[in-house]
Length: 329
Image 1 (cartoon, rainbow, N blue to C red):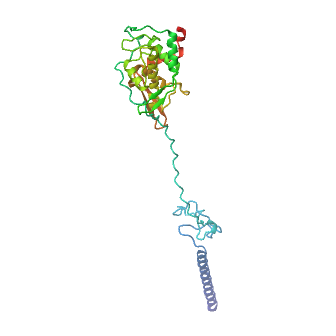
Image 2 (image 1 turned 90 degrees about the vertical axis):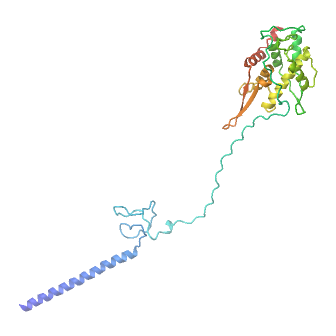
Image 3 (image 1 turned 30 degrees about the horizontal axis):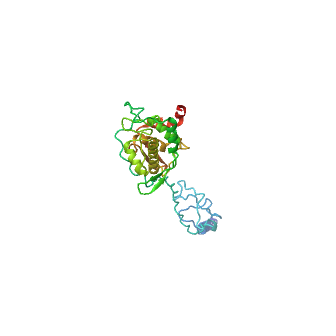
């Protein structure tokens, strides 16, 4: 009995000893495997290992790296490993040349405002206190110090005077050669002023066919170095057309850059220079003005007319178109 019991005890002890040895050996093996795996797979700081625990053969670059792992603890599918391949390494590039700041497009040059020509753009004589009223429109009955010339003679004198290219003595000592005036303009003003009556004298002092004022006689004879007599048909028409020439030069030089074109503007059909000349012949240049304004956005220069007698201007322009003297014979 004792011998069998001793054998059983010996077997049990031996079995326990062998089991402990086997367990110890297995434990060391597991720890070694874990250490080896850790040493073989270093992980970059801030990144997480792949799900298998083994390094990815082709590391990828994270498109949107996270500063901390996700709350679930699941590894990021786009984590960067510690040893990225050369293809993932950013290649240094040359420092790009700093591009010159784009320059703003040059603003279009502003349209130049008309520049006054030296000469007749000197201040005109003082404007009369009251605008001249043609005798046919006045309530005061005109007088006839001398008889009227035939309408045919008046028309011929007007046509001849309009066709002259006069030399104007400028205020700076030079001269300016004026282009001929439109015959219809001269004839229309004469018709508006006197009805082509060469011997008429208005109550306000207007003389003859062109209703020339006494002060205008002295002024025009000085400007054109002439000695025209307003009491004669030829002298009167000369003085009136000389005044028109001076007005064309005055407004053309001061407001239109030296252009004397009285024709309608092809684009607008307007006749600003013509309107100014007609208005000033009746109201005086001191009462008629042309003001220019340049739009800061479009740089377009436009002008505005200051005309105190628009009905007079409209009447003369209507006469230019209808030419009633042709029917009068």
